[in-house]
Amino acid sequence: MVRVTRINDTELVINADLIEFVESIPDTMITLTTGKKIMVKETVDEVIDLVAGFKRLTAARIRGPGPDTEPDGS
Image 1: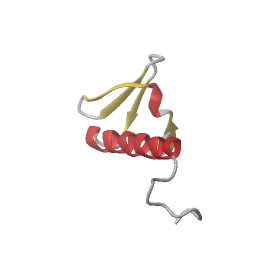
Image 2: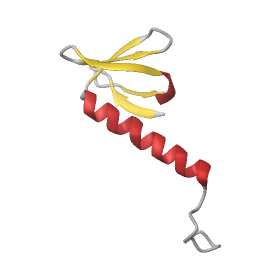
Image 3: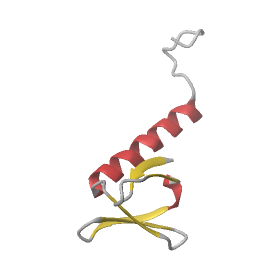
């Protein structure tokens, strides 16, 4: 899930897996796989960074602790 800001300053959390594409026309428009379109204040690059960060976090949770991690999680 990624947190974005609508044009009217309300916060919205979007399922990053449902994002089909993001365009700048000139405001940033997020189109979901459902066909729903959401205009947000974040730039296209900021949305990309938010989604990439979410994907990294999700992948890290799936992989679990690395080989250099102590048994107590540190």
